[in-house]
Image (cartoon, rainbow, N blue to C red; front, side, top):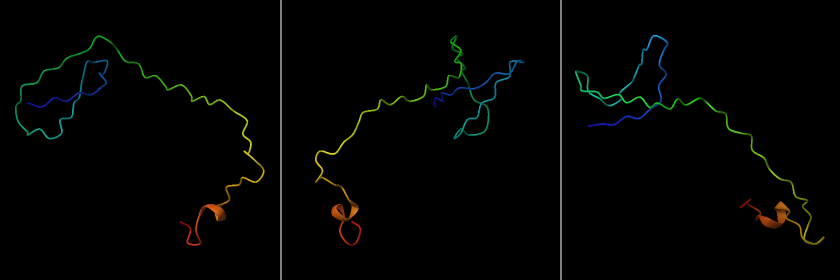
Length: 74
C-alpha cells in the first residue's frame, strides 16, 4: 500500500486530478479524504532584522584578506 499526501485544486465542476508516481497502471482501490479545513495561500511575512551599531574592538584589529589567507588564497 502507498500513501500519497498532497494538496490539489478542485475545479468548480468538482474535478480533482491526481498523479500517482510509481504506481503500476491498472485498476486500484483508492481512498480520498477531503479535509474540511480549506487552506488559503498565505504569503510569508517579510523578514525583519534589527540593526545594531558595529564598531571595531580596537583600531589595531583588522580582518584584511591578506592577513587571514595564505598566498595561495586558502
